[in-house]
Length: 562
Image 1 (tube, helix red, strand yellow):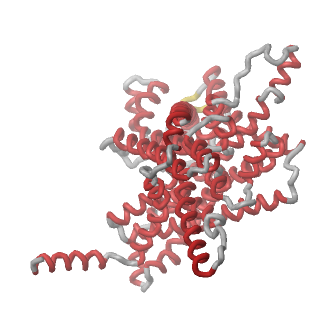
Image 2 (tube, one colour):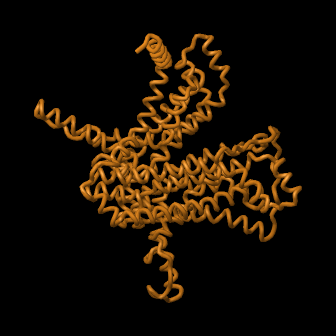
Image 3 (cartoon, helix red, strand yellow):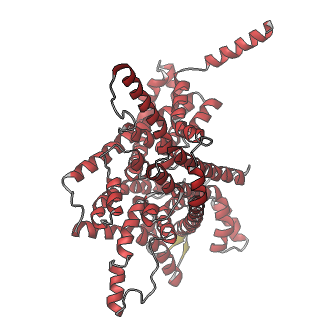
């Protein structure tokens, strides 16, 4: 090596280490923490499975592919239609109940998909109240009439759509509220009516928001376990669980998880590529009050019904069913072991929320003070966990920690003749780890948005007063972001309360949460007893809905709505 090459390498090394500090190391560790399950999953793609994979490919894999494809297609289309249509109605039209529906349309977010599946199964099954009423009213016997089967792919898709459409509604409404009146005025001068304006102007301008909402819906659909497993619909998520615990084949389960993860990555890339280099900006900073189209007669009635049905079917009716079952029968362990189920759920959700918000603060502030390509890439990696289904996260975590437990026990047995059993994989530690990996993106997005509103001059003023970066975060930024940090923590808290696939796979022995309790009782066809735990989850889930409703009251700049 020449002297000049040596000096160049030395300069490059010196420049690299000059940028390495506590914040960059923190960003790297957080990104590595989130990426570990993905790395483990993809590392198992080419490992031998002893013929198990060939067996899966020739028997159940086509069914997993077909069911997952149709589920994603139906739910994506349904949520797009319901979410976009109702958002346009409450933003641009005036009809009875409009103000009520603005926040009520978010209520189905409080109901986990597996809970609505349990409620409607009890209500619509052959022995349920609806079919019983039909037989008693018309004198029919079983088999004399046609009634759609709720435990089917179509039933699962319909119920998942009713629960997940608020993701599209939320982003579509925010986008419609932010649109410029000038653009809409131009459309009207060209002779376009309200519905033509909606289809040709508002929807194309809101494309990024609509695609973002549908993307969230598809991620949640691919993550869905409780409802599809209860309905007997074989998807990739149920296949991963069955391959791991039914066949005892972790490598084959990891390879199924890799297929699912590849599908998720493909969805994200397709969305990015389809968007291309198109960008959507406002042409003016002046905002006026959006015009409202008054609806009368049958149009007002149609708008009212269109907004009422999703709320009625997606929240009011299943909540009433659960409440009735909980009052009449309910959980036989209510008041005794039920308290331990609730404590497990609340403690895990609280710890996960604190960890996720803390890591999100470090991540977003690290990017703020070291806005380098490395920092930005690390933040993107750390925020990808929400796109990874819970079952994939669980498999990617359980494999390395099970290996670590075995290695520790082998070493202890060889040197001391003792075996301590499961250290990590049999504890609540990996549950917390999975929750943080899965929901860190939820808190990071909220914290990053809040931190971005703090003017950089405050950082400069703090530095002139002798504050370090950590001191500035603790004493300046944290108090300013208190409300956003609380909102981020509550969102993670509720997501953890509802999470099912990762919890079922990773939970320690004899450690049940409210979600697991509801699932186990429903799997045993004890739906009335499952109602108590299910109703508790729904009540907790209402909290973020209220927060979102309050936050959206001032969603439009220049709005006079208080």
